[in-house]
Length: 78
Figure 1: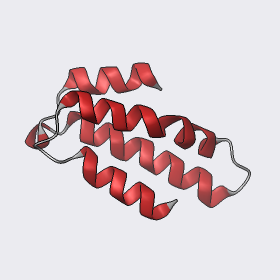
Figure 2: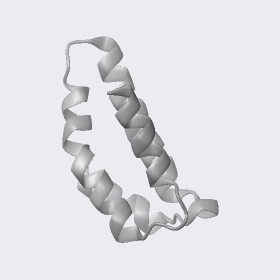
Figure 3: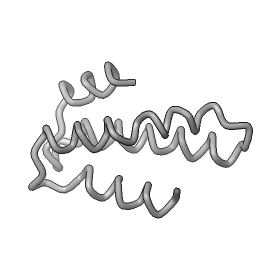
């Protein structure tokens, strides 16, 4: 799962991707990440939480095309 997370995080912050593409990537992985929060394994739960925080930071990072509306949309998806 770690390699997939790294690739996902890198794709989320690329400047040339459209907002729609970012939303599609997040939506496709969000279910699995949320299930990770319910895992009995502490490392898995912690990593799932870290991924959610990373996505939130990427959504609002203005240097990479983010804004508060993106963060609001992400919160609604969660």
